[in-house]
Length: 290
Image (cartoon, one colour):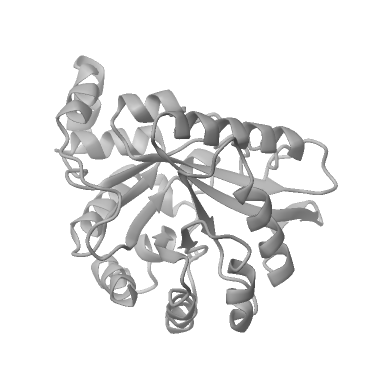
């Protein structure tokens, strides 16, 4: 199915999305190995289109979908995280069979905007994730201790955790302590900041029974265990920006994956837009770490 076909189906038979969701074959969240390898593609909805040195890398939807399909077909890849538009394209392409599917919930903090830290819930709602038979929702939780608006983000995140738990769905919380430096939002990846963000995220909502954490690898890799000791919640590592040193990135992931509460990786641009443009090779190398 081409981009033209996708547009035609959307224009003439929008019910096809619900039909594909209803017919999709699902799988357990965790397979036999007890690990998760998830490909992330929710960046465009925040206006974050850059990857590597290309400021518009993710602006080509046909190319992005092709890269996602390649990644999802590789052995060991469990699923995908994305916004409604991307996940529904993948549904129509038949690419989500037997995959874990995580809907991205709050995309309102647009990259570079004055209101970037106001991470409002403009994406999937818990009711949408349930209706589409997806497996969970991901929420971004950036907290700026000097910004009173962060309290609204905390309340929205807690409500999302509750609404997902009420439906028996996973809530994947991605916490950061953030601040503005020269007008730009920067995430603090020190051990202390990551530990505090994990502690805050772990306590959200009326139950943590369905909550997972999605956390960065701290700046001091030898101290990653100290940060992750803050919670017993199952945790996945995020990939971040495209690395200029893939070997060093893999070494950091490998070390963090040995920790008892780390259950896998959620990686986007690093795998979809590797420096050598070999998506399959980048994905296979990440899967090998698991």
